[in-house]
Length: 104
Picture 1 (spheres, rainbow, N blue to C red):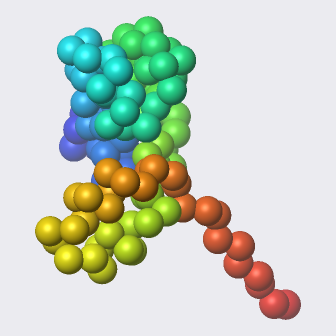
Picture 2 (picture 1 turned 180 degrees about the vertical axis):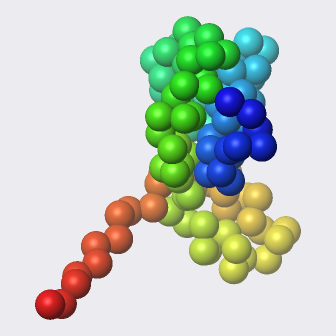
């Protein structure tokens, strides 16, 4: 698969997976902290071959493996000088799913 054939979501997934894999080779603990991973998740990712990473990205398709933080809007709305402190002080929990009701 070529980078030119990837969607924006697939490209983002591939780039972040690659960053995580490189990071785990350098400093497992720091990479887990940065990407909010459990050690078991990072260890499992490390077992993937490059072909395995591509296969995962292709199989997941248009689903992001890395969801926005629950406080993303608050970070955007905060003064830039404060955003880094707020991001460090709050855990990067994913946003809760939004339930949409459809009337028929």
